Amino acid sequence: MRAGPTILVIALLLLLGATGWFAYEGLSLPGSSMPIEGIIALVAGGIFSIVVGAGLMVLLFFSSRRGYDEPPRLMDDRDIHD
Image (cartoon, rainbow, N blue to C red; front, top):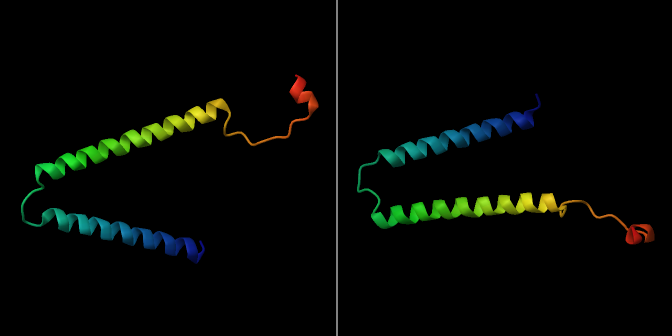
């Protein structure tokens, strides 16, 4: 195995570990909980993200079925009259 992919994997694992540590430390700190407005905003943002993602997937499948994703091709006179 070359050095490039190995360094990339190590860097990504370090980032994953740092993220896990940061999340654990943030969740274990004492203090007040999130206000109801924050919970509502979090839920609304999550629902909005899911709706946008689903809408984009629908558009992707729609354009694929209609042939909009096909590469362009030149047409000659025979293609026009057929």
